[in-house]
Length: 394
Image (cartoon, rainbow, N blue to C red; front, side, top):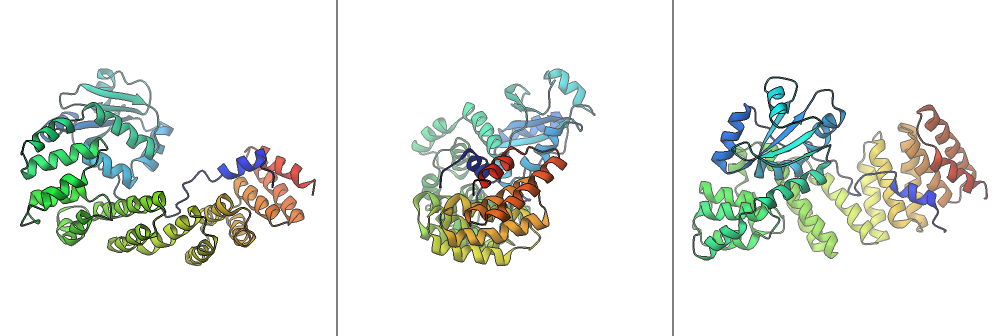
């Protein structure tokens, strides 16, 4: 089939990651509830940087960051470990004074300050989760102390506090850390001391690691001392990390490890397996196992979840558009999404799937309905109109 410009729009319409598991809505950034001076004092005592979200209540991008970026568990894991996080309304309380001090004139302004209040880095504008983490990493690179700590480590300074600081510096700068953690923990007779538990928590970032097994071993202790949502977020992100490695190396054993270790999460184990099976077999181009995974996934869905129905149908197109068995499965989910929600992109997806299945008349009807809906909502109709023109030739 000729790849048209319309196909390009079609592939992009979902604008979501292929992994369909719902993002963990807990375990995001924990913001400091205190004054600006208290945040600086805490940062100085912990040798950290203050991240300050300078926002206003009327700022749309600020609200979107608060709704979509700050609650993300990956963002929470990184920012909670490396920064003292502070939200300040620039129009209330200390806000106007801080806005003047730091020349804040656009929102959101994202400020990174040292313990003395000096600007380490500043930028403005909304950031999605991945971009926001990358921004944090760029800031941490400016303060990368891992080389100095490595020197001390190699010289024999290997007490728990020094090793924890070294591992944190390695993690903050994106450098390998497991070798150091494993070397240190192998020398310890009692892993349950407070400093050793902190080292394990900091290092348990991949489910396929001995350190993660230690983390699970002491999970009950962590649950008593930390917010349970943080523990779940830790498990989720470690399993996701191992799952991503399974995709990179096409290693089904890593997939199975990630799925097995996810059983330690309080709620998401089943959902994680369904979603990771679906994506793994899609990216491995294994149509037979993908079909089995797709059926299991669809069976588990809330039948009114239009977003997941749409995403799963989109995945079929993205990876198996020439496989008729897969496309027939996609048709049912796409059609159900249109019935439930019926936004223009869903009509476009459904019409394209009908076209791939040779149902040209039905595809025309759906495309026309999609155009009507788009016009009613004052949304673009170009992709639907182009598809309709292509269908007129059949």
